[in-house]
Image (cartoon, rainbow, N blue to C red; front, side):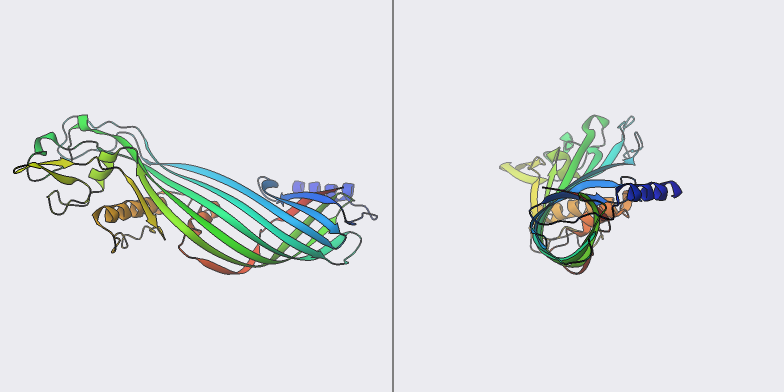
Length: 338
C-alpha cells in the first residue's frame, strides 16, 4: 500500500503543472477506467471518446466490451455409480461452466463549467443500450440410450449397463437487452495539458427486456431420458414419447431434438417454479432443465458472490427496472489531443 501511494504521489508530482491548461474547444480525448488499488489499475473494457465542440461543451460516445468465463469441477472422475450396474462406471471429471459477454454502447452530451485552470466540472446527459449473453453449461454422466429389452413393452427405463452410459452436456443461453438513460455529474482534473483523471456519478434509469432462454443439449437421447420427469409409463412420460407402430405395437423414442426457447424470466433455482403452467409436457421439462442449471450455478459455483458473476445474473430478471444512483466506482484517466 505504501509503495502504491508513493507511486501515485510521484506520478502527480511528475505530471502536475501549475500552468496546466484544460480543454479550449476543438480537442478530442480518449479515456479508460482507472483503479489504482485494483489488481489491474488500467481497465480498458469501457472506452469513452469525447469531442469538445467548445471549451464548455462536448459530445461523448462510450463503448464497453466485457467477457468472462468460469469453469468449476462439480463431479470428480469415477465417482458416480448406478445401483444395479454391472462393472465399473468410469467417467472423467465433470464441469459446470458459465460464460458471460456484454456489449455496451452509449452517447451523450456534457456541459462544462468554469472550475479552475486545472479542474473542469460538468453535467452530462446520456443514453445507452447493453446486450447481455450468459451461457450456463453442465456436463453429466448418464444413460445415452433406452434399454433395448423394454422398447416394445409398456414402459421404458434408463439402462444401467456401462456400455450405454456416457458423458454429455446441456446448456441454457440467456440473452437480454437493457436500455438506460443517465443524468450525471463529473469533473476532470488536468495534471498537464494532455493528461487528466476524473470521476462521475449520478442517476440512472434502466429497463431490461427481450429476455430469452434457449435450452440445447449435446445428446438428445441423454437429455430426454434424464429430464423426462415421468415414472416410465406411457401416460406420464414427458420427453420419451410412445409412437404407435401399427396394431398393438409401439416404439419408445427419446431422440426428439432439444432446442427449447423460453421467453421471459429464467428460473432461479428455487426448486419450486419448475413447471410452466401454460406450456405442454416438453415445455415443462425444458423449464425443469433450466431450473436445474440455475440451481447448480447457485449451489455449486464458488464465485456466485463475486460481483462480476452476480451482476450478469441479476441483469436477466424479466422486465427489471432500475432507478437510482449510479457510479462506475472507479476513477477515469484520459488523454486530450487536438
